[in-house]
Amino acid sequence: MGWLFYTDRRVQTYTDEKAEIARLCTFEGDTRKTELVKACKVGSTWYAAATATSRDGTPVEDATYVTDPDGSITFAAVFLTAYDDGCWGYKDMEESAGPNASRAPLALIELLSDLKDEGSYAHAWRQRCRDWASIPDYEEGDKIKLAKPVPTTDGSTCQIVTATHYSRGRQKRRCYRIEETGELVRLSKATLAGSELLSSAKGAASPVLAEYLAGQGG
Image 1: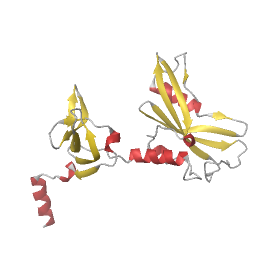
Image 2 (image 1 turned 45 degrees about the vertical axis):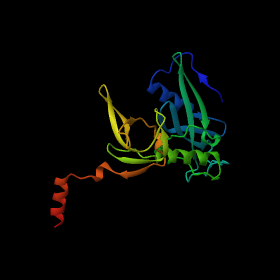
Image 3 (image 1 turned 90 degrees about the vertical axis):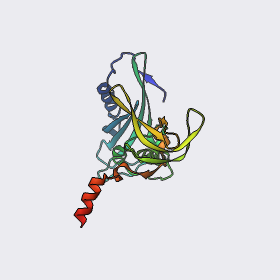
């Protein structure tokens, strides 16, 4: 399915978007009905978990999903969204179609029904979501070794960096200090995939605290 834009501009806010995602995930067919269970927005993409049940109360039979004990199945849908000249639009895809956008939170993935085929597009999509969620969220002062050298703007590369920040107005922005040069660099979350924590800021106790803890042990 391609993009669909609402020219009446009825969707303008986050609340409007969420309500529209809920409406799109709630419908009744001849044999099944579906309702939204959870929706999360990551960037400009909405991820939704929706539950399908049979209208006659019998267990849902599906080629992709294992029927849950209550007879329903819960699947994921991805809604790419954008604004064009003030008009909100979306492009939707069910997880079994193999969407590229794969940053659904684990809390949403855990709501989904089991899959019958571990080689399916849906299985690969869920794994990409788990891989994304597993990328560490480093803290100030953590020293990190990236999985591979990353190019910098001056044409060199960096691989060992320390998490820090810089200020823009009243906001703190995450950046990383290059071990070799001391220069600051911005790194995307994807760049941190497969990285290794060399030393944690939490692990460096102050001398006073260390002396106190040693005394407690004695």
